[in-house]
Length: 190
Image (tube, rainbow, N blue to C red; front, side, top):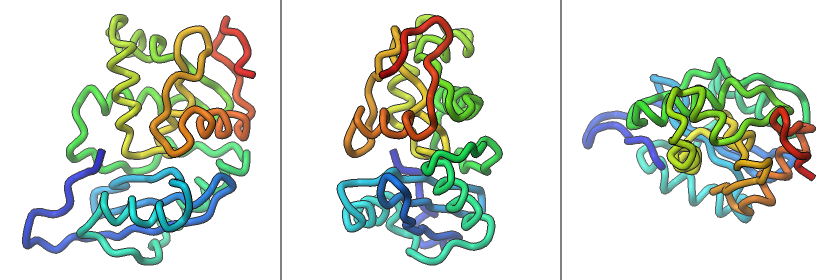
C-alpha cells in the first residue's frame, strides 16, 4: 500500500532514505504530516531502492532530517535486538482507512518481545469475527517495522502470513531478534 503523494502540480515536502539494518536495507519516507511509509528489506539494496522509488515517486532520496534520523537509529537498534518503543512515531494517516488505523494502533501497543494473534486484535477492536480482516490490514501495513505487524501471529501461535521479502522466514527472524514470547497460553514459536 502506498500513501498518496502531493496533489498533481503541488510541491511535496519530505523525502525518503535507505539505511542498513541487521536484516538488510530498510527505508523510510517522511513528510510534513509524519511518517509516510516504511519499507522492510527487499532482496537487496537496489531492489529496496526501486520499491521506495515506486511507492514515493514525487519524493526525493535524501539524508533524513534529525527527527527521521532518530527513527532510523531506533529501527536499526530494534533490529539489532535492543528494546525500542516506536509507538510515538508520528504517522501520516492520509489514505489509511479507519479500520486499518485501529489495527495499526493495536499493533503499535504490542511491546518488543511479545506477540498477539489476529484474533486477539480483533477482540481488542470489539470485532471478534474480524481476525481475517485484521490479517489483511496487517498485510497492507505501509509502516513496517514501525507498526510491528511481525508481532501478530495466526491462531495457535502459527506464524501466519507476512508480505515482506522472505515472507514468514523474515517474520520469524525479526521475532527471534526481539526474543519474542508467544501470546499467553499459546505454544512456543520455535
